[in-house]
Structure formats: C-alpha cells, structure tokens
Length: 144
Image (tube, one colour):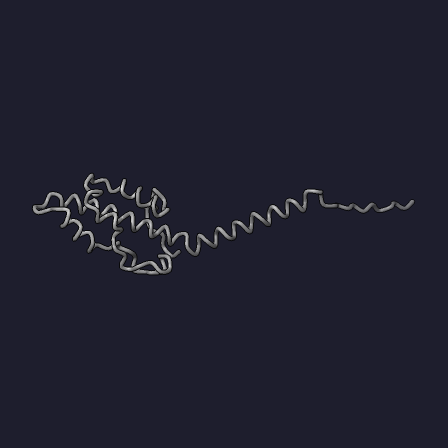
C-alpha cells in the first residue's frame, strides 16, 4: 500500500499585509528621523551648547565687572557688544550658514536683565524665544 504524501500549504494570515505596511511605515519614519538627526540635529545642539556657554561666561564677566570701579550700564553694553560666542574651529560641527564669529545675543547686552546675576534665567527666556532646549547638552557633539 502506497502512502499518499500530504503537502503542507502555509497561507499568510489576514494580518500579514497590515503588519508589513506597519513595519514599512515605521522603518520609513525612523529613516527620515535618523537622516534629519545626522544632517542637522547634532549641529543645532552644538549651537545650543556654545550659546549656553556664552550665557554662563556673560554671568561670570558681569559678576567680575560689577566689583570694578566705574562699572555702569554703558560700560557693560560696550563690553558685551564686543564679545563673541566661542565656536569650534571646525565649521562642519555647526549648521550651514552659522555666523562665525557670532556676537553675543542682544539679550546679554541688556544691563537691566543682567543685573540679577542669573544667566540661567536669561537662557531660559532666550531658549524659549529661539525654540531651543531649556537644558542644553552637557558637552558638544563631535563629527563622529
């Protein structure tokens, strides 16, 4: 007696196409997000880091100058207008078109706003206006 061979047929489940489309959508979104982060994301975070460092430096300079004789709103404005944000020498670490040297934000030249001596509050105001993160990166990103 000869046995008849049974062929096993595996048909896809009704959810197969839906799952495949969901995976395609997820991979597409992740691809776009990784592309954006790789081309501009970390560069913009670097600008935030260096701008925040300028705010900290302004606070230090203001405190130092406040104790000097002849300190006035005019002397602060004149000093602050000459200052620049210390940016990295490699322009590829910053967004295309970033001004270098970049002057301090005009907010830092305002004597009355600097008077309380709290640059972190000024940073929060500035970052809110410029749509930047309230807490900047702890260190700058490198090209790697």
